[in-house]
Image (cartoon, rainbow, N blue to C red; front, side, top):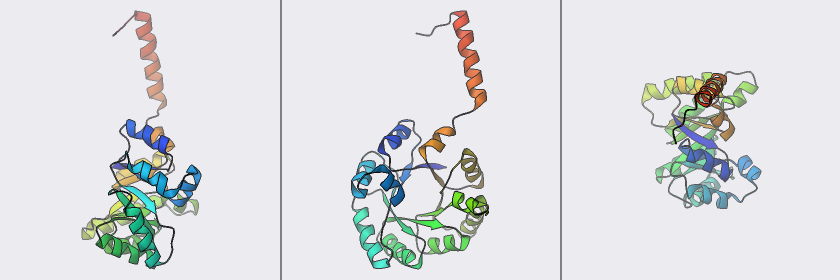
Length: 217
């Protein structure tokens, strides 16, 4: 499973990248706003040190404008994945942009039939939003499972990018189902390393080493 950092915070991305835990990055207008940066400027900086896909989202809602914005975003770097919403206009933009050889991430997916349409439109990635479905009482992971089955049934190459990941359990469940990618805030990715028994065991080892006067260097 590939890990994408869901943030526009360059320092947080660098930290995860140094740990070898970043295969790509996803951004959206809300995350860019939170960073306080210009969308072109921050996206260019992220692409300067991240080799994997970097999703940058269009702001337009009409197909022709989405296509124009998508082309401008794609000009930033070769690893840009143009992010478009799962609307009819977004699907039209996806078809055109993917046909031109650009990676396209179709976002705001909340149903398996939407995901099917995105795959047929040539999407590189489909982004089903797990947490937001959970918020309204619908099991988000069930959607990941449905999309996995449909894509496997027909051999679609669109990658399932599990989005709106909010917990370590979300990450585990998405991996068990077989999502190709998960995108999560840096805090969730780092939390995956934490376990109280790891901390307890390490504390015991260090105390024993100190008591025995053990040294390596």
